Image 1 (cartoon, rainbow, N blue to C red):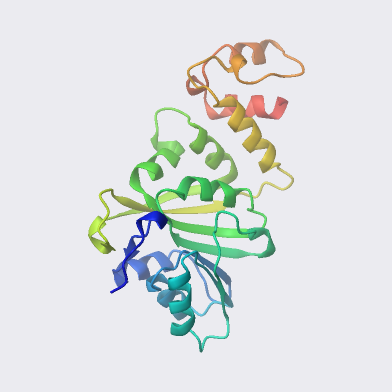
Image 2: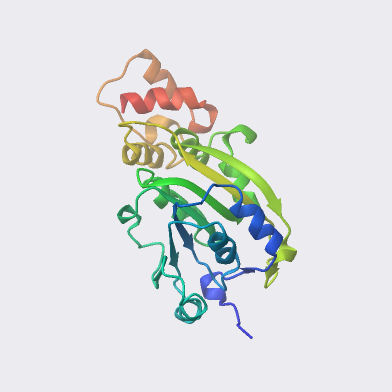
Length: 245
């Protein structure tokens, strides 16, 4: 019996109906699909049924990637990559749709890494910790935070549905949610600059903004906003500052 590795945050999805529900959230026919951490291939099975143009499986676990190679050795449109998704260069793949049951310990970091590659990615559908999914949702939180500010201004975000921990092996202690992220048409919008601004602005949210970020010039409005804590501002206030950054 395959023993999940705690060091890699492995909790294998074992419910086929949930897998179908997740894959049906995007039209994958004749599209380039990436699955991060396919594990035992439960989601992979449903992706293949959707007739993608190409399927790239990125799996860090040596044992699992070899099992997947054996399982799908007859599928010519599948590429197997035995690599850590946190350091993989996603910019080499164009017009991709990404699926993943993300390990809880890397989900936020990996999502933000991928958000900065939205020129190459059309849609991301992930299963993450329910608590994190709720913090990502700008419309359902009382205060602006580092994550929902960047997500709101870079993509269309939706917390699609929650999942019982009974559909995993081993059964995690926390609840999960499936989320959808689609890039906004930002034209020449600089996401790296937005990330830099976000990191600086939220560096110490208990202090006034003027302690976290500086500007080459200040008008009355900028001074007024900088004299407040970041969590007290609205998105339009933050975007005004960003455009002057």
